[in-house]
Amino acid sequence: MVILIFGASHTGKTNFAQKLLEKYCFPYVSLDHLKMGLIRSKNTELTPEDDDKLTEYLWPIAREMAKTAIENNQNLIIEGCYIPFDWKKDFSPEYLAAMREYCLVMTESYIRRNFRDIQRYSNVIEWRAEGFVDIDALVRENAKNLALCEKYGTNKILIDGFYDVDADIWK
Image 1 (cartoon, rainbow, N blue to C red):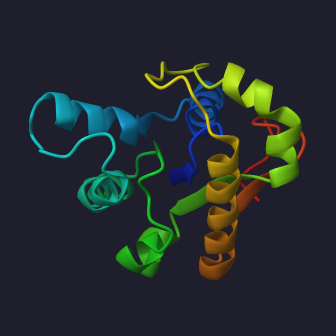
Image 2: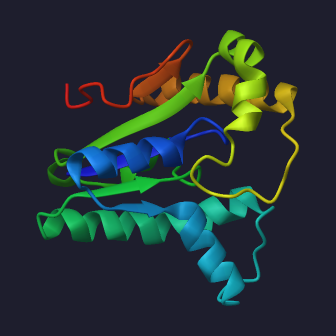
């Protein structure tokens, strides 16, 4: 089984992947770690600010890692904001049968009600260099992702209250 977890920044993708690792013992790959490894090793001229270009650069690598895991009957979680919403086009039905996707999306009301907590917990799993979170940008990015989930029929976890990472995601 390959599980893809994606969504906007600050939605808890890495925390969700970590909880799944702890519960199911599935290894996970953070696309942020891959990105920083490639940037720091100077294997790319891209920078952390090149989001659109990073998706184009990282997704082919992650895609082939997913295929390799499926071919070897291995479990793998891939998490990060560099998974395109149209990812399914890159896989045959045989691969898709062994994959699950979860886009984490926060509602505007959730963001506005819990903004202090979003800021406070932004470093719960990994340290972030930036200290400022723009509430309006966060609202726009999540609204955009919700629209893309609808457009592509993406499975989503809509965060409007408390979301339980121990919930049965295998439905």
